[in-house]
Each structure stands twice: as C-alpha cells, then as structure tokens.
Image (cartoon, rainbow over all chains, first blue to last red; front, side):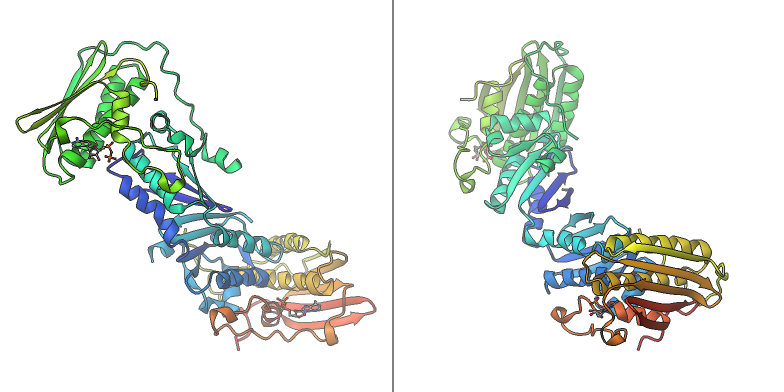
Length: 109
Length: 109
Length: 165
Length: 165
Ligand SMILES: Nc1ncnc2c1ncn2[C@@H]1O[C@H](COP(=O)(O)OP(=O)(O)O)[C@@H](O)[C@H]1O
Ligand SMILES: Nc1ncnc2c1ncn2[C@@H]1O[C@H](COP(=O)(O)OP(=O)(O)O)[C@@H](O)[C@H]1O
C-alpha cells in the first residue's frame, strides 16, 4: 500500500496513493500506517540538495539536532554542495556524519 | 525555515527548501527539525483524495489505526469520495472522525 | 484538492439499460473480488446514469463477495464464486453462488450496527459488513441447495438507503 | 538528484579581473550579513573564473561578519559594519571595520579545531568559526584605532587551505 507521509509541524499528513482501501488491502494499509508509530526516528536523512551554503552556525545547528535525537537515530547528510562539502571537510565533521550522494541513494543504502 | 519531511518506512527524509543554513537561519532550522521529535503525532490527517472506494474491512483498518495511536493523537479524514462518504455515514462513523474537505483545509484548521 | 460532494440522489436519473447483464466466476481470493467489483462498477457506469445506484451496488457487492471469501470459504483460497448481475426496471438484481460452508443456522446474519458512541478503545473494528448489506439491499434471500449457497438481493433504482434506525 | 562534486582546484583558472573592488556598509544584523555575503558571492562569480576561490571567500566572509555581529556588537543590533573587497593578482583582499567591543586582549582568537572524535554528546556545536577563518585566510591582521576595529586578510588565489593539522 503506497502512502505518502508528510510532516507539517506536529501534524502528519498520510496520503493514500491507491484508489481502494478494501479487504484485499486492509492489512497492508494498517501496517504502513503503524510503521510511523513504532519506529519513527530510526534514520533521518537531511537532504541538502537545495543548500548552496552552510556556515559554522549552520553546522553547529546540524550537530545539535543530531545530539538531541540521541544514539538510536542516525542523522545522515545527502547531496552536499561544494561549499557544504568544504566546511564539513575542513572541520573534520565529514568523519562524523554518514554522507550520501543523494537522498535516493541514502534511502537505497 | 522551509523543510519538507517525508517518511519512508522508518526513515525520515528532511529536505531543506532554502539555499543557506547560516547564522541568520540556524535557530529556525533547529526548531523545525526538533518539531518532529517533540510532538510527532499530535494530528494525523488521512488524505483520501485518491481513494474512490472503502469497504467495511478498510473502515475497520482505519478505526484500528486510530485506536492504536491512542487518545493523544487525533486521526482526521480529508477529501472523501461519494462512496467513502456513504460508508461512513451509514455506519455512523462520520460522527467519530473529524472530516475535512481537503488536506489543505485540514492543515489550515 | 477538495472534492465536490455527490449530488443528492433524489433527482431524476435516466433509466438503466434494462436487460443488460453480466456473469463472472472468480476464485475465492480478496484480490479477485477487488478486480471483479471494479469491473462491475465500470459496467454499471456504462449502463446506468445513476451514480448513487452504482455506489450502493459497489459497496454491497464488495461486502457480499468478501464475506464469502472470508467466512464461507474461511479465507482458505480454494473454491469458486459465481456472480450474476441483471439490470431491470426496478434496479440491479444480484445473485451469488458458492460451495463453501453453509451460513450458520441457515439464516443470514442480522447485521446490527455496532455501537459507535463509546470510548475510543471500545470502537468497533469490524462487523459493519452485514449491516451495510441489510441497509442497502432489498429482497435479500438465502438458499442452500445441495452443496451450494445461493444469495439473491436487489439494489433499488432510487432511494439511498433505508432509514438509519 | 546527486550533485557532481566540485572539480579539484589545483587546475589552472583564468586570472581574476585585477583591480575590481566592492565596498558596502551594513547594519549589525545576521540577515544583513546573509544578504551581503550572497551579493559578494555574485560579484566574485562575475570577476573570477575560480569557483574554489569564490567558495573559500564566501565561507570566510560569513564567519568574519557573523562574528562581528555576535561578539563585537554582542548581537544587540546597533552598529555598522563596513566591508571592502579588492581583487588583485595574489587573490581576494578583505577589510572590515566596526565600532564594537575590541577583540579581547587585542589578539584574534587562536581558532583551534574542536575535537570531533569523542562520543555523540561531546561533539562541538560551535567554535568552528575562527578555525575556518585561520585555516582559509592568509595575512590576517587586527588593529584597534580609536573606537574602530579593523580586520584585514587575504584569500590566496589558489590553494584550498593550509594543511589540516
Ligand atoms: N457468507 C457467509 N457465510 C457464512 N458466515 C457468514 C457469511 N457472512 C457473514 N458471516 C458471519 O457473520 C458475521 C458478521 O459478518 P460481517 O458483518 O461482515 O462482519 P465481519 O466480517 O467484519 O466480522 C461474520 O463474523 C461471520 O461469522
Ligand atoms: N570579532 C570578534 N570580536 C570579539 N570577540 C570575538 C570576535 N570573534 C570571535 N570572538 C571570540 O572568539 C570566540 C570563538 O569564536 P568562533 O570560533 O567564531 O566560535 P563561536 O562564535 O561559534 O563561539 C567567540 O566565542 C568569541 O568569544
């Protein structure tokens, strides 16, 4: 059952992408909706494709988010621009984050 | 700070929609990322715009998702097709769920 | 995007193509039920100009066929279900045949509406099927003939449903 | 979509438009710093064919100006910052002037790299600013002249950074 989930603040919008929720699909529907409840924060992929620039304050904010989510959550970065890549490399934070070419690659990993 | 968040199974993809994460935006970035952690399941809006058909098994699955999320989460329905609306009305479940014309209306409510 | 809600079914509709009919046999699987119900919906859309009738028939047909898969054949996947649909002046006539377990006691379930006014944890997660069937269908009958269950019902041409008592 | 990573900056680049310069004065606000840094980046893109130089300058400028807003003017929003940028044969020369607090002890911060090899909870959330400045800038100097702080530095035309010791 394909369901697209989007977060707006503290609200989750779950958009069913199929045309029927019936006996043949009811279990799949339920499983997909519950996946969000049971382990919502296993991985967070921060997709930086639009981000051309990151400074030390921005980097500090990313680190503090990672710390706040704790050990159970893996915060990973995707699609680094040349500047973002430079700032991470110079500060050695490229060793701290898992880094992916794109969010799609990260999801496939 | 505009960040689009999408859930894929147990992974959250957070896509920054702006071109800079810098000192001027660092706090907004952090707040937006933490909103997901602190109250992830305040409301769930089930966007049924694509759903033409719901039978009693599908309705049962929706009810069981609502029950599993418990009292703290409000499960609301949006964009009912004529059949979905009929099934809810006949079973009196239209009195149990908050119902919205569209997911956008629901988010604005 | 918001949807427009369906127009009130009280308004006049063109008559269905009286006499049009459709017969199919499927295996006892929820996925086959889904496909057949969607096919019938298309057939009805083509032969009647009555969306409300089409919607009611789609609901009733899904409940009826799913119940046969789940209860008469106990979701074991073995068994055939035959469906016959005839459009007539008074509405849509439906016949199903299966060779699964007989309906217990030889009487179709009463189909009471489960209570929906209690606490969250007491809300019903099932049991709506026969309520919907009884509410929408007219002239419901059941017969057991040797090893065959035969259920007949009619969807009236107009009238959304019986009063919701 | 994946990005292609930037080409290695060792390769030859056309010379910048030597002599091109830009001067601006802004109020002491992080938002004004953001806008000015973006403007300078455009100016550099137009006058140099050296993306690596543009990127290094953008990083250094953001750190330098944000530090003045945050530390010299203590993020109080009052005060002006003047920036002057000159392109020359050896690279990009930068001068800032502000009338905020003097740098403590009259010496620019040493800018040691905070340790990043400890546990999650010990990771640094700040303190990278002067490390980046010292790592990327050459000929860094500070003077206090009456009520004015003056910081000068150069971004060398080539060379990504000093060895990362
Ligand atoms: N075709 C059938 N053959 C035998 N038993 C049936 C059939 N349909 C329904 N039943 C019985 O009637 C009960 C009520 O059915 P229904 O209202 O559809 O609820 P649900 O299927 O959600 O339990 C079922 O639990 C089942 O025991
Ligand atoms: N322009 C300045 N004027 C006065 N003090 C400064 C200035 N820049 C930096 N400092 C001091 O140096 C310290 C290190 O700065 P920096 O490396 O940018 O880290 P951060 O700003 O993240 O704390 C600051 O905490 C501040 O005390």
